[in-house]
View 1 (cartoon, rainbow, N blue to C red):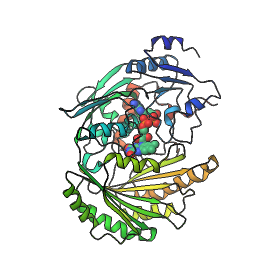
View 2 (cartoon, rainbow, N blue to C red):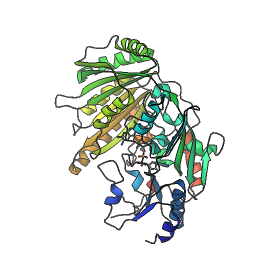
View 3 (cartoon, rainbow, N blue to C red):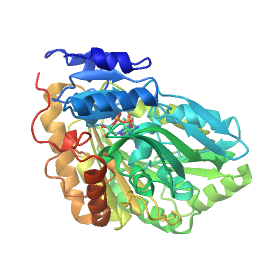
Length: 451
Ligand SMILES: Cc1cc2nc3c(=O)[nH]c(=O)nc-3n(C[C@H](O)[C@H](O)[C@H](O)COP(=O)(O)OP(=O)(O)OC[C@H]3O[C@@H](n4cnc5c(N)ncnc54)[C@H](O)[C@@H]3O)c2cc1C
């Protein structure tokens, strides 16, 4: 493949052309240990937005499809399935304006890095639940992060995006300039029709007392746990994040009811935890209340999803009863082929109203994320089959799915990731801004590069 012309125009990027059979270089860009069947044939590791624009022009001129790659964290490995991967891993600049409480970050800035920097200045942002995830695809899909009931989904704190379009043009989109691009960049996820090379963020004052309590229960307590959770969360302030983590064990599924409070003072955090504890069913074990600053939260979440394992993941939004959703999940976890798998069921009845006017348009009172996690390729059919059957069982209780962690590989998806109205508008904008489908590689039926 002739890439000399491209190389001459780049400011520092490296270009790797992959011969058939050398898909390992493409696979290395995917976080999931389970690698996609399709492989990229060209990797451009950009060093600046201009490099991204040149790579996009080269792809367009050569009839390639292209995909940006932030950190390759989408569980489907979708970022490396176009002909050309534009790796944004080196675009990691971050600038804070402390007085204005704003930040400009490039896509490879990770949740952990942004959170640590902000914490040192008494500021915060609704960063995601795992520190290694880059803001790149996290923000684009909506961003379901810490303290989301109070701080909102992260995309609502994005005030501008710098974007390279399919024709190589570079624009900055805000609520008033290129507002249709701005609308799409807040929630379209992998269906976005451009490449975001920087996000502008509005920051929050930090919660100075972040405190967590965990109560552990056997599966047979599911209904009592759900009733108590519904009851206390109906009265809880928005700064409470309540999640039940369900894991399989040889003795049956175990429930961990985790309440994290993002309060202004220790006294407030204690009072909120005391209220949450009222009527709590007797637990096998109670851990906390304990201080859990963001660094501690990341130390806890990161090991539960280790890199290198094989993952198949899907999500659901529900406005149904927590007890019904949780009971179904517990039933499914009892059938999980791998004990490393888990489900998180977040109860968000205390969430502040979500502003509209973004592509991000599917959400609910309950969020469920089902993670099939296993070691060996032989386990693929059983684990993927389990995940899909479990989601099928939940579908009647649910309204949609979250694109950032959706099983987008599944051909017969039942749950939408956008409202119907948003889906139509996004399709129209894609046709306008990316008429040749440069970025729509994952929508194509044919394989782009079989090994
Ligand atoms: C361990 C782990 C924990 C996670 N925790 C959370 C969580 O708490 N909350 C949450 O909301 N999500 C979470 N996610 C999901 C994650 O936010 C998404 O998978 C997101 O896509 C990851 O970003 P990425 O840049 O690595 O995506 P990649 O896999 O690199 O890219 C996937 C696709 O997104 C699009 N894309 C990515 N970056 C850009 C860009 N700059 N411009 C245009 N398009 C782009 C492209 O279409 C690309 O093909 C988690 C994922 C993992 C693996």
